[in-house]
Length: 523
Ligand code: ADP
Image 1 (cartoon, protein in one colour):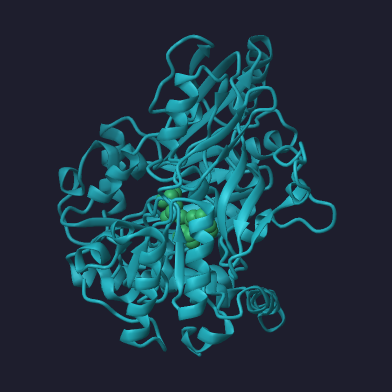
Image 2 (tube, helix red, strand yellow):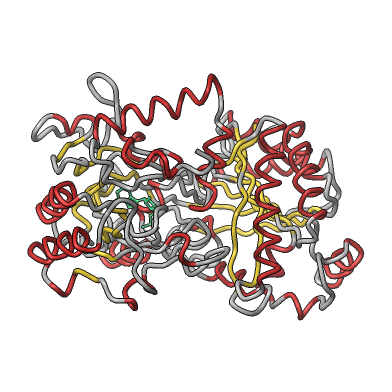
């Protein structure tokens, strides 16, 4: 991929900056060939790779090297885009928002610094992958479980910082973060929460600070580069029961949510609950052409027939309870009775006890897997996916309303429907997976039109996305419009104070430093 310079940076300035970086990390870790740029590009890009072309990448091996790079970037005015493992697939992967930005690859810092069995937390560096942590916990017999996202190819830190989630009681990953170390945009180092006191023993156990607390300020953010993160883990339970069901009808999602949601709030179910439409299973069974070869979206009658042929319902419900066996059995009874008020379909029940093998394909066990990535193969060609993901309150009223609207918009654009709802205590994350073939220009253009329409439609009915691809960071940030975007204005005031040269991730999440503000889409 050819070099694009960052806005306002000349070729000689850029070269001088890279040479300065070489002085810190050496030639081997200053990656500036066309091939290197390809490596850090968004290989799921819905459109032209050049839209978010990296200028180069630089990979420090320590906090000190990170500080040195950040100071030099300030001196040479080279913007940096920090990544942990850069597997943010569907959201831009390793690529930066602004073309020419140098990717700051933190993946060489890959140590698991601490695992505390008694208090159930770990401390990780950016490069620690879900697989690294999983293997480490097992190899060293730590009685702790992780929570993993559907595709667990990336890092524990990058996923938590980007508000990823999983399907266990510890599935709200940003909430597991406790106490960070951050290299600030000027090169200074700061520790959040109790870590503000040198040697404080409670850094990774108490999630607040003396005064305002800042952990969440560094998530989905361009305020600093996280170099260490305390992260809570789940103590290994003694026993677990899974209850799964194929619910036949589209409208069943209403009573399903109204049945589960109160149990999430009163604590009977503590798992981050996943309910997914049938395409979620089909994408793992084959390609679209194995089921239907017509143009446009799969017609409803065809989808109904496929479900009948494969014994699938419209929705798959998977509920898991964890803890003491006697308590789990009592909880399972309560859940079964509550569902029996609405359906004759019975749960399939499986029990697990400590010491037994876990089902590695069940996300409720927190074992990392990349199998769900198979969905990118759905369309054939160079497949990819985008997720349209509004947050809705966890009641049937909101969920049915959002479902009806997004389904109509997706159908109007002739795209296959694949939705899931993950239920927290009070909200649901509604992921609408949109699969496309990157080689098919018309498909890509259609997906982009669809994405714009979904954002506008959700905004109109009072819902917003929780996370989005680089190309929609400005449009989504625009929808958070109360009082002339007062929240964004505050974020940008903080950004300007912390990062006067606009060095760290300009444009991330629609937050633009003063120096780059004219780059905001539509400005
Ligand atoms: P993963 O490692 O799971 O693939 P990424 O490395 O792609 O995740 O990170 C996801 C997003 O989180 C990045 O685009 C970046 O904006 C942010 N991010 C990742 N690592 C850091 C970090 N160490 N400090 C600050 N932000 C980060």
